Image (tube, rainbow, N blue to C red; front, side):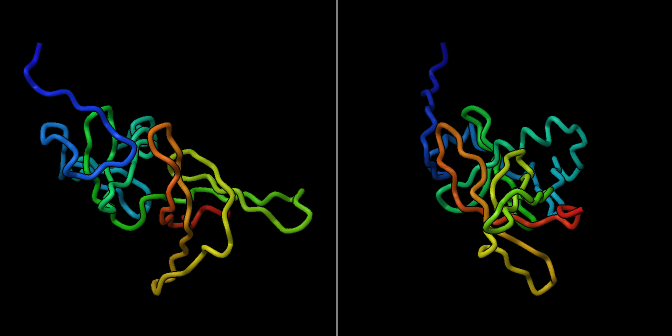
Length: 151
């Protein structure tokens, strides 16, 4: 048996909460187009891309990391932590058109029009809740709306 102390993740964590042996930095990057990079090389395996997107969490300090058991891999976010990959309109809605977004982590949620804004560069963004897990409640995150989301 190891003499190393055990580590039990909490609902909300700071970088200081993580034992150094479980904290990895400098390997992962999330590009503006939603592509994941490992040590500067694009990750091509779709399953691994989806896993990384689903495991993306925000620290109490506002940085993002991928959570894999007790290990935390800090992520360099080029633009926004989430990408709206697709928007569908509910044509059945009577009062107003409902917009259902599919996010880069595979989750779906209803978009709120009041959260949309455009950057000076002409990029459209919104605020989303992201995925809720048993250890972490859904939080408000920035999401870039992909150019293909409405196609």
